[in-house]
Image (cartoon, rainbow, N blue to C red):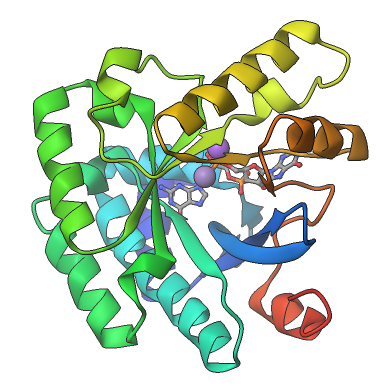
Length: 253
Ligand code: G
Ligand code: G
Ligand code: MN
Ligand code: NA
């Protein structure tokens, strides 16, 4: 299987789809957002996980075209939800290549206009490593993104190598606590200390916090006690197809 050729074909013949994982406010139990996660259904190989094809899409530059499709498709989903009277933000994952792309601002702005989605409902997830190469250039790009009115998140927070002294200079709205810190709560006391410290630091920097990979009621309780109220993980829901999301409404929204 020559993945690069197959990826080109996948773009042409619409083999990609998105799933949406709910983000819940644990106090109300209400869905406040969804993270869009790409899926590749290959005609003969079946499902190919993003961990396998995103790095190749990134290396070949195909990620720019795929990422533009993800952005548009996720915004369309979000505007359909909105037209049905539900307010839920939409988060999408950006890759390093997209973040550096000279057309990124234009692509986001064009997509928001085309779909008619309020910019504040769109959250763009970036990783620490994407920001730490050329920090000054990254800050400029983040500022341009903020001018569009979108919200910015740092994904997988705590696993990269971002410097805390830079963190306060990044115009970022949300920290997503990586699943690796959450998964062994409450057995691992170090992970509990680290998670509590990340939450406290985010609040001091006026950032919101989302905990990822939440799988148990004990983890929800710990996060609530430590003032992290937005949670995402299998405890509430796996990523869902658009059909599944609409089948669940309106009871959970
Ligand atoms: O959904 P899943 O756990 O299989 O995702 C695995 C990885 O793929 C995660 O790191 C996630 O951020 C990444 N990923 C999922 N969808 C997208 C996407 O649309 N664009 C990019 N760049 N990465 C994605
Ligand atoms: O890197 P990023 O945070 O974007 O990746 C999110 C990935 O984590 C998705 O692929 C999603 O399928 C996966 N995921 C979401 N919730 C859980 C969870 O509760 N447990 C585990 N093991 N994985 C999860
Ligand atoms: Mn993510
Ligand atoms: Na993450």
